[in-house]
Image (cartoon, rainbow, N blue to C red; front, side, top):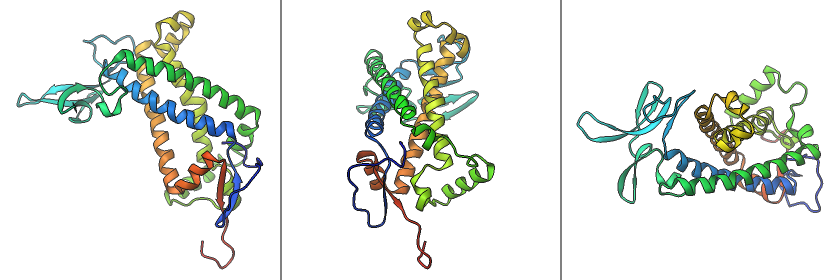
Length: 290
């Protein structure tokens, strides 16, 4: 995610489009480190959540307090056990996935199934070790990327919306093009579209800071350094709930990102994040099919 006008020592053959040097080395390295960190953070975070699969808001959090969300085992009318997920006043049967799932052939009461967590068995201490180590690696990697983004001019040239891009008509057109699975060609293919810019800026300057700050708010040690965070987020339990919601929004961003990669062309997108080169589809000439 750097300036599209960067130069590089060589160009790949691209008979069906124009090669553009899209990502610098630092961007590519930080991207793959993020892939590793986010994967471990998500899976270890779910293991931590399973130690107490309930979320609260405000000054609550004891076993007998009413949660805003929980994944538990409930009793069915016939007396059998069934896994359920409760959100507010609504209850959903999620047997086999949330609340209760099979582990090594046996049913267990656990929020998320073992194949989603790290480690796969319930181990709060190990889950925390994995989570904290990769959390700090993620933060350091993000700081390096942020400094590079500002210093290289990538933020100003490629990520900040240009004049007119945030007008309702331009945004609606971009949404309509995404719905039709219509991808830009020519010069437009060499830069990010308005929805991409808003998504990246939202993740970099909203979701990731919120994720870090809510994580720090849950630490008693950090509360002694910055008690103001407890006031900002309404206590550790509210911060835990916001941390969970933010993690799911990041997961949604990643899923949408992967879908876009599949639609736009896996090899072209993955190659650009490995070699730096992206092949932009050229505009069809007059008389040629689009």
